[in-house]
Image (cartoon, each protein chain N blue to C red):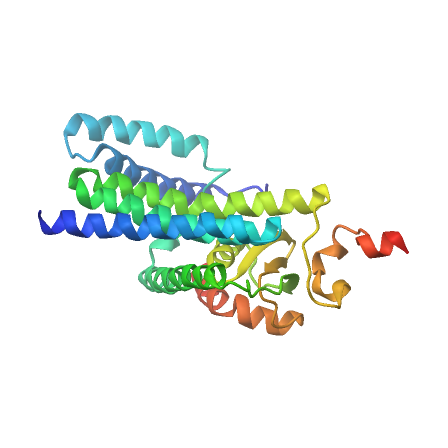
Length: 121
Length: 170
């Protein structure tokens, strides 16, 4: 076991731990926006650390894995932003626990809509 | 898309050529002369075709002061990314699921599309926030634990540290 293999193994372990936490977050969170939050952050750092670990295990792939890390860091937040925006415009409004629902959802001024309580009354 | 002057086009073309060449070298992982010659021509054609669409900045991006701020931005960003992962881990592993979600908005002083994109992506990867939409200079942010709905305070809480540096770069 060389030192590079040990570092690579530890990085892959950290990456898979964060990916597991992200999956658990997607399972536990109550609505689509909170699920995206957990999913995006955990998969970004988890994936980056995993690919970097592969780079350490196989040093000739190091530059390629760095390029992949840059692509992950660019594309992951863009995809989650596109999903969140599409979900809101499709009519899946965020869960709000606070009593003042009007104030807590600032995006209503762009996409006007009624909440379920207002539709009933 | 605004019309670019010739010098702007030349600057953008040079920047994208250099970056594409770096990516080419990283992918081939070699300095063999055949690879480099093919790379120079391929990346030149791609840079020529995409000069109006993708390139963000002119040659001034290699100014040492800007490079310093870019590296500083990277350090702050990586710190925020690690913090946000531990934040997610803490929320997910707490049995009572401590969240108070909502959408807040704030205005930014950034002008160019590219800098707004960088700010929006950074916000998505920092603790507890997710960019839902950018309309003009207004950002709409889904916040997993809303501390304030006041735009000014939300701005300093979420984006203050990033925007100060981005204003120095772009």
